[in-house]
Image 1: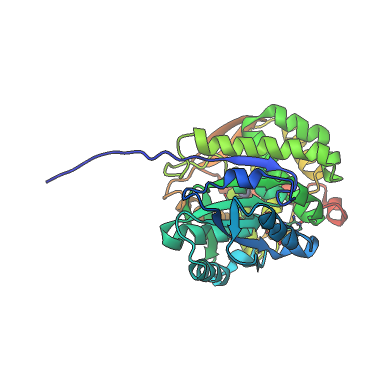
Image 2 (image 1 turned 30 degrees about the vertical axis):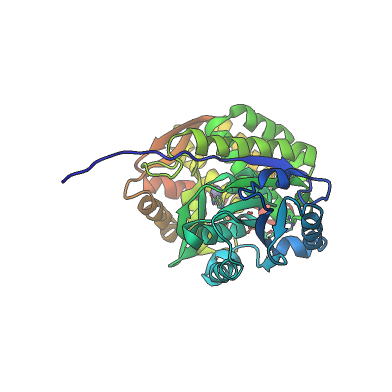
Length: 389
Ligand SMILES: NC(=O)c1ccc[n+]([C@@H]2O[C@H](COP(=O)([O-])OP(=O)(O)OC[C@H]3O[C@@H](n4cnc5c(N)ncnc54)[C@H](O)[C@@H]3O)[C@@H](O)[C@H]2O)c1
Ligand SMILES: [Zn+2]
């Protein structure tokens, strides 16, 4: 017997942006939680310790919110505090702990795991939620600029393993994504800047008008002006959301990763620095490197190249790093990227701001020149107190 069939499964993806999701008068979460059985939804919460250190009242606000919305939802246990940042993804400790807690709390496939925090914790708890019972409902509450501009909208969940970034993971669509924009005020400066490199990335690939907005408002964003920053984060989120829901390859089965512009070098730099360089800061350097390569190849003119580098710099990023001198190791990032794609080398590039294309070969001599060029670019910025890694 030989049977062949194709079938499709419909997914729903929902994003809501709000200010203070756990303020008692905010009913958004109650509206999102579906209680299929008629009983209040059971919710197990995990919270980023970095958020709580910066805003100690956040934990109590969660408990108070659930008390005020007892008809819609029950907090299964007191909120669990977990280490935020790359510590959550560095090994399997946090993943195992989350799985253990999910199991002990008897979370079923109609209950919810709700995680509040930065991209790293969202990735780790998301993986645990996908593994437990082969998948329980996950609600991500994103509290960093990077998770709000990019990662919370994605369908990737994972941790680092075998010395490779995000090696262990699954593609899975969260039940809902909530951006709590009120939390951004407590971010460190470095974590505040970090998310805007992903916004620049998506603007360079798809949206010249968004790039112009970022370029115009870069100083205000750097000075943490929410009125300038929030529209940029939302525009970036919308591009990432549309990419997942409309581009036809949400689970990246094809050869290309069109939104991974600048990421082959970024992931390698993160790994080489033992995750001392933040993802967002590494993406800024990766973008600067790839646009410099594009310029040296004659694909990108000098004027847009300069505008891109200056905009990234005005947003607070330092675009060179001593690790760029470790050329051979860094170039290994190209092979890692290729392996992720299934053996096909397909690197996003731009010909102009908003005009993307794919390349399948990288001339390593020219890339080495791009590295040197970038390291030499405005070296006096190395002392700037504005720059971050
Ligand atoms: N899944 C995806 O599609 C995807 C895409 C891009 C990036 N990522 C991953 O996201 C991670 C980076 O995420 P990130 O930039 O959000 O950083 P992060 O999660 O490392 O958080 C940065 C720091 O901010 C703290 N924090 C979180 N919210 C806070 C708040 N409101 N106030 C004060 N401190 C707070 C955290 O504890 C941490 O110390 C990387 O691991 C990266 O690989 C995933
Ligand atoms: Zn990224």
